[in-house]
Length: 407
Image (cartoon, rainbow, N blue to C red):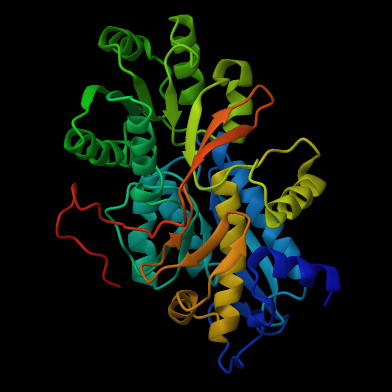
């Protein structure tokens, strides 16, 4: 094993010898080609359509982690072979490709998805076929499946910390705008309950179809409502049209604060930094995070994808997911999905590119919340962070009282 790569793994997770194989696989499971000592994994993201602006780079970060692990000896002596598929920004396509990866390609696990619509379309496939999906993006909660590892933010790790921050700034009149699908509508349901419980006001709530570009009516309603801040759950390239039309109406980020939950460094560059400068975002990772693990990750990513390449929160989670899978496989001594997920929650606290993390019993991450303001150089200045990693809560008690995650 290359000693530099071994050292790098220690810096990423802080596990050292805990990554050692704990037992021997006696039965070759689905996903492993015994003759070549290769384990197949699926990488399933939108490489075309409205979500490609965000998902192509998550695929790239996932493939980087796979390459690094292969260069350092693989997983239990097996080389990882990635089978890459295009979900084409279509939930039905995601479900079809997930089934193809599991049944035809015999993958041991799948990394991918972005929209909640794509995840919900894939969920019954993974439950029926007893495989495991590693989902790297923030979502609306109200879901808990033994066959999904939810490493992106739960509502109490992203949207609700952002709301607490907004109230602390005196922003009490809030306009909600989003794409018309599961995540924005459920996230805004949660936000409305908490805004009302704090004595705030929802000054408007508007949705556009995913991929939509006509925001004239939405912008007019925002202008008429005169909110203190806009909470933006628009996904994909619709954000280009939204911010352009807001700017044209004299409502740019320096005039009316906008905090986004699906715009990070890559999307900011694609939309146009001058258009977004001064806008806000809430995530569990920013490229500007100052820690040794993140510096090493950025350096490795830029060596592979270009010296000016940018990195986002879902990319960071996509990268970490592959390493988490490796650690859990080696702890379990097996590639079998059920054994892997049970070993995953037994992993200790780790130093990672996000800061301190741990997988909770509900198969989600303890992680720190951050709020950043976009600078003219395309990086987010972190202006607030939670005091410590926040425990994930899939079911918000105000929006979904009495519901619990039981695996």
